[in-house]
Image (cartoon, rainbow, N blue to C red):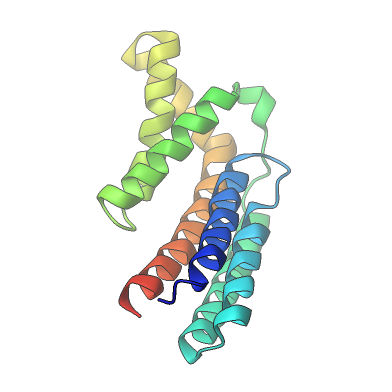
Amino acid sequence: MDLPQLPQLLLVGLVLVLGLLGVLVPGVPGTLLVWAGIVWWALHERSSVAWGLLAGATALLLVVQVVKWLLPPRRLRGVGVTRRMVVYAGTGAVLGFVLLPVVGTAPGFVGGIYLCERRRLGTHGEAWASVRAVMRAVGTSVLVELFACLLVVGAWVGTLVWA
């Protein structure tokens, strides 16, 4: 990696992180930000690996949009989703992805929600009932979108490390 490329890569990385955070915030186009970061990097990099990653990311993120459209609609207020819960769930998903690549995202996401609810409600039974309600209402679509975006960002990081 060239030293003049470092600021460019840091900015692309920042856009990707903002995209990942945007997936967790309703109304923020997180997936679009992740895709835009990959487009920005591919246009700057101009290599076959960059174009291949862009094509794969585009296909995956388009499929995710269709899958999200087919899932039940989000009902955030009705099940008591708070900002704190979103932070716990997102942190759990990212930690799960890092500790157990790819497959750790789902247990980390659910674990984050459980930890938040256990701290708020106090008992295992009430916390688990709340987790089930949240996952039925919103968790699946957010998890699908976050998982896809984490795969794209992970592929980008892998490309940087091994290229």
